[in-house]
Structures are given as structure tokens and as C-alpha cells.
Image (cartoon, rainbow, N blue to C red; front, side):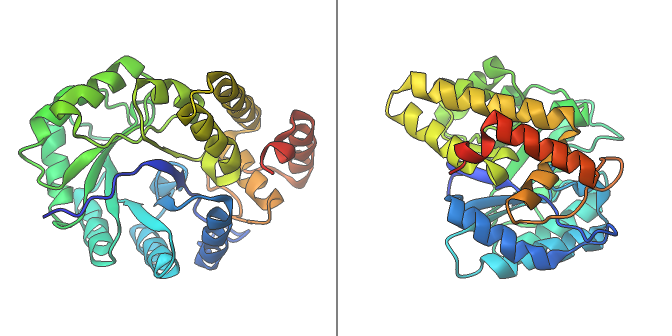
Length: 305
């Protein structure tokens, strides 16, 4: 029997920490975990888009997952490991490691170089990965803006149910709220569908979302926790205020190059996750100083108190 704890509430899609020279720096994981727990975040999604997974070697991804598994053991934090890769053998290796380490779930995005051209092929790929961790819930990670794989997720859920025994749902990183609503109704509403677009979270909640996975929860968790609280209380006016703050924050970071700016923001909060890896870019000391000034003007540091 599959032991599923739905990904409700906030799940932080965490950064992969690097040394200044770009080498993996797993020693920072403990600081990341402690900061998130202090901020009220009880679950992490590692090695995804925010984690720059396609810029890591297989060994680095295994080292990262191993370190996270060690750090969260005995804490209130759950671990979700992204295991997707263009190489399905690598993906299966990562899935097996995560399952053996006791991860709460695994997730995988679609191969994106040689793309699956049909739902049938996509399901075959996911089934091959999920079978390497037969006791671990599996979430397909739908992020068409980055993979270029734009297949209908409501139909995926209907067709994959019998072929992937561990399928728990989707990490739905797509602003298409019509498709999201159709997914919520698929399978008589039985699927777990954490939403993955921070700037559309309030809309997803209105559709019926119960959880979210996002990079913004690393540095702005209090803002999003207040959004969830306001929505739950029926205070839509307050929820809209918090959502718009999140939109303005993402807009500001994106102007500087989102990955590098987000990592620079973490350093400002005392969690130095290092630079981004090319082809993502990092901020210079001067650019970080400008960003900090803009964040102060925006009110960011007050928002996260």
C-alpha cells in the first residue's frame, strides 16, 4: 500500500548551493533546512528547476540528495526529490536512491531534448522512472515553458493511472488554470496537484489547490503563508494584497536575471547558496547592492518579518 502524504501547504523548491568557484557545496544544506523550518516551511523539493538540475552531473545530484536526506532525518521536514533527466537510466538511478533514502516522494519532468511526442510515450518514460522506486509516490512535473512538452495533463492522469502504480499526481507548473481545474476534477478529484507558479497561486487556490511548490518560498515564505491563511479565512482582499506583493517581488528579481537575483537574495538573508551556474548568470557585488536597495524600497524585508 502506497504511503502518501499529500503535498499540501508550501513546499520550497530549493536552490542547489555552490562554492564561489562553482563547485557543489553540500555543507550549506543544513543552513537552508534550518532557515526554512524557522520560516514555517516543512517540505523541500530538491534538484528541480530552481535547483539547476540540468546543470548538475549525476554524481552531484546524488551527493545533493544524499546530503538532504541526512539533514532532514529526525526533523519535521519532508523531502521530495526531483529525479528527471534526459537520460532515463540516470533518472532511474536517482529514483532508486531517493526511494532507499526514504524520500516522501519523487518527481520527474519530461525528457526535453528528444521529446515524447505522445501521451503514450510520456507515460512509458514516467513508468520506467517510477518503477525504480516502487514504494515511493511519484509526481509528474509538468513545466511546458521549459521542457517544450505540451501534452494534455487531464488525459495524462486518466491514462497513466493504471500504468504507474505509484502515481500520486502532478507538480503543475503551468499558468493554464482551465487545464488545472480539469486536472482537479480528473479521477473523481483523487489526485494531488501541488501548483507551481508562485505569481498565480491565488488563482489556483480559487480553483481548489491545496498546496504549492515554488522558489519564492525560499525567501518569502511568510508572505505566502499569510496568503494561504487569508484565503482560508475567506479574506480575499488581504489575500490579493499578499499575492500582488509576490508578483512585484518576482518582477523585480526577473529584471536582474531571476536565478542569480534569487540566490543573491538568499545571501542577504544569511543563507549563502553561492552563485548560479551558466547558462544562468550571477550578480556582481555592485549589482547585488543595487538589488538590495530596490528590495528595501519595495518593502520586501518588512514583508517577510
